[in-house]
Length: 550
Image (cartoon, rainbow, N blue to C red; front, side):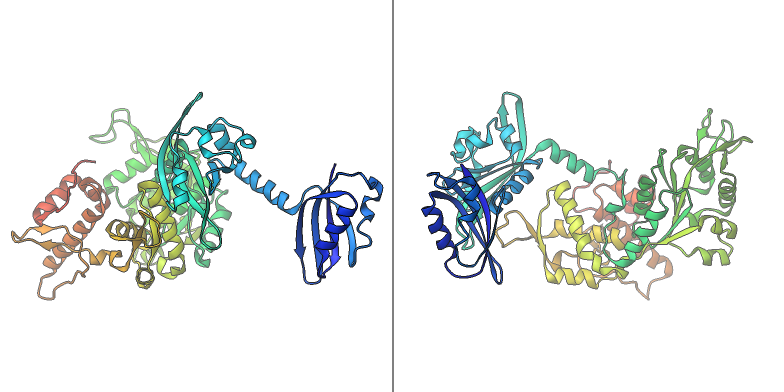
């Protein structure tokens, strides 16, 4: 029979020797012993086996009484190392990934529940045996015993239940002196990776406040206000310069509101004035030439029991503002060409990068509408006011690139980080994302720390928009190229020529960043044919393959 004890002594030399002597004399075998010392006390945890039955169980606690500096003894169920091992096993068995580790001889030291299920084996039975007993198609983990690191290797394993596809990562295990004492393999199921990639790369449909990245107090205050008012139906106005994340806030508010209806975004600046009212409020058949015979539901109706996000509301014409004011007051919408009102329960969130108070003074925005929508104003700070968030934003964007495109970054050099911190960021977080994606693709430096395939972002790869300029070839054609120089306007050119020069640079910048001409046109908020005409007008040719299709 075995017993486990926790013994407490005043600290002194020779305690372990005295315990071992008294236990041997009493007919006990020591299974294990652990010692923990504090400043003035020593705790000894021991498991013993009674092999000679010299001492009655009732007197077992008294065999330590005569040891010098002994204070007390208590029975325990597990030793500290046992408890650590049990906790470690619980953590491993609750992972969704398969984990297998081996010692330097290739014998299994750890195999968690997921791996045991996939490989159709019992963890207790295979622990201590050779990894080759698992009958795997490949034993990449053995290569790590020679110091090789294996990242994201696609593998297949076929058992009686079917085929298991997984991505394998193998790395050596080293001791404190750097010697390889084993290796570990982590296998992530392919379907789980696809789900993760899809959740990150998909269009943001269910954004929450946890998706808003920032530790600066100003952004945290804005998030805090938005979280408090999200469950209500109060009208919210979001203020912030372009690229600060106003729509991200709007989507997070909608998600946290729990509203059952749809989230419907509307860019008021992108809709022509003659179409804005029919798109927002809908119309009945025969209202105007070119409309559907059966009429059309407006965006406010589409957002019933949901949220409508009116972006760039400052660009809304005054006539449409009057109708929006009536809609907010009456909580009802009237389609163009109809006398009937339709009751709606739609949460309204507006956003603008302009100063509405100044527009009200200039009679370019209705004062009564301003007070209706400005119930809860939330100011989203520009990136230049929270530059301490740049490192964590970079980490977030780099992780997205790794998942979406497999682009792995070892680190960003101090010089590159310094350039990012020093910049003014007129395009805010959106611009930062574009810059870091561009830097990753332009980087030619590789990691020197043994992390194969990982790139290093250096200062030469960090290019801002004003450093991306076109050049003219010998035929006088404007050719897209990446070049670290600024766009300068000439005092010798007329206003018309300077505007044309600037328009060229804006078009070239969009073409540089987008994969297709159609995508560039969408960003520039002009039609695809219009962009092709402007490219022809400015003799813009491309020195890379680019599709004119979606």
